[in-house]
Image (spheres, rainbow, N blue to C red):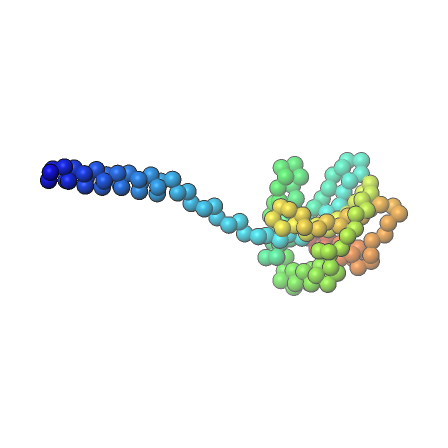
Length: 151
């Protein structure tokens, strides 16, 4: 009877180790949370070639140029703290995030606010019979020219 109890205890111990190993081995680590990156994009193009040029900046001041061939954003330069603060305030004050303009034309301009790779709001204009608000045109021109400047 003593040998049977010893055998029984060893079997239970071995089974417990096996189950524990199986349980720990099957637990996959949770994927890391993807940081939320908000990007402010400006672009223009279209016409006969259908080519677009797009620049974007994130809230950390990094500026990217869009590579449409490989569908990626390529680091271009850093925006100064003063310019970053100015443009973020302009975007907020003009309510670009909630503005609704969808008037594309043969040659179009746009301002797009993206969270990660998803567009939150995109305003587009270029139709010959549509003039966007002056403040938005001014912001677009300032922002596009500043982001497109050579580093």
